[in-house]
Image 1 (cartoon, rainbow, N blue to C red):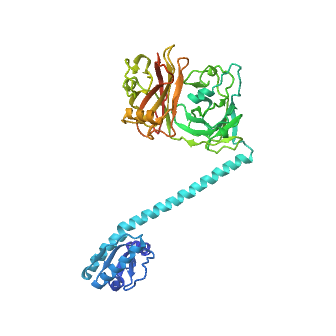
Image 2 (cartoon, one colour; image 1 turned 90 degrees about the horizontal axis):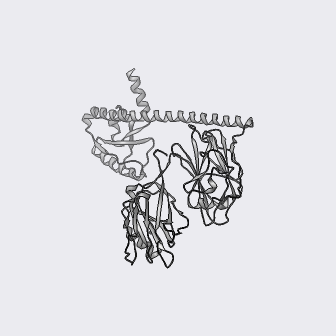
Image 3 (cartoon, one colour; image 1 turned 135 degrees about the horizontal axis):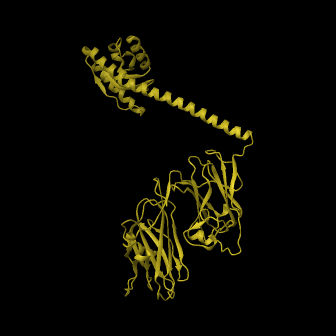
Length: 493
């Protein structure tokens, strides 16, 4: 039995030539246990080197002539580029039996086990491939069965029709300065897409940004960034690549917009409950117990939804990402430092922290830029930043306000000076642009980043004069809110 096993191993390895030798030493290998593992390199043959069914691990010579020829031939193998350098071992013909035993242990032992393990993995991989093909075939058969019975793969399960109240002011400006959230009043299981109603679409350039996430965990599902040119003044369908599967959860829409003109996002009829009314971080009279006008469509979990008019595919899939809102703590805000760039030396403090209001005051001066910097205020992964600003005095002169994000531990005064000198921030920084603010109504300022920041960043609050006077121009900035994306779950409040 042992002889049969040994014979079987030898036959399996016979096709693998693992030992190189010169043809001059052929007689030394004949009749040995490793005879079938040897590839002979012909002496005095200077043709381009080739190997067939061979991958030598070691080169063996028993004579001076054989070693010289072997080294010459092994040098030619370097041109192949796929065979690593093979060591040449000179052996004593008197101890051939012991040497052959070691060579046999090397090739039939470790290398043989590795070959058998590789063959086993290949076999299991082939089985998995067949099982996968069977599963996909069954999946296709299931879809064909649904189509054969005329079962709709996607159906509307909920709708809020658009309703125009004569008192509506329109939430277009709100979308440009903040965002609007809407909870979907259906389970996430099987949701294949939704539709939003627009009563007007701007002709100017701009984009509607829609994000879908799970309320319970904050994990993202998908995001749509749609240019206005692709929208229509009617129902616009936003589809998912596959209907939602897994556990039943609550879905949340977050909608904002960019561009010089505002998009007309429609609202629905008033409802009794607050939970499913649209909401925003900035109060707006139109959102008083009013949901957005939307429709929800469901299908088979994991199945691609059927096509529909005006269907819009997602720009990004956010699976595995979590969106977390966070605010700047009192301890962080209190660390603000004055980094103003102005030739004027004022008699009062232009930048300070209001502890009881969790706000920052940044008073502009007749020339230059008043600025306050908070070191490492912005956490890695942050994708957006917003805050509210107002002139906190009824007779206060108007001013301009902006935000600047710069890499952590950068020279804040240098960043402000660069902006004052060139009118633009450094390439490594993010600038919100200047917004005029007065004492009549607070404004909301946003920075929407194209991708999450990779490291912590410093936050700078800037102000400058827009008129000849800066009397009582106490610019107050509050309501700091930031949104970051991560791959780890966090408590969602």
